[in-house]
Length: 177
Image (cartoon, rainbow, N blue to C red):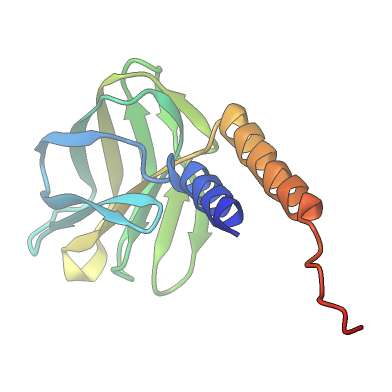
């Protein structure tokens, strides 16, 4: 039983180990920012600007990533009057355009596909229209994508746990004579 528990704990730790793997520090921003904070398996940077935001606006966030790997980056606004027109991430991995993923009357989400980010400094440039509120806010999420080797090790761990469970001997019952 002890081996089973240790195997499950090890497999779980391996699966969750790269969840919020990005090591990000904010270098500068034209917006008010807070974070980054770990929310589940996401590294989140909150941002806010206004009132008094002009139309059209251009805002920037410069950050340093010290942990190269595969990531998905999302930009979300929670102000219904904000309309992003473009979002571009520039840095050592080259310019990467975020694409609109979701847009409804209450919020807007732009995201990248899975991208490889090298270690280095990046600038996220956000352009759009503030609308009648003249302010915006929301969050930027950075989610690490587990590498294939991580998945392989996790599956190998689950296989080892299954093998150990199968090899367990059946308890010998005392027979009454």
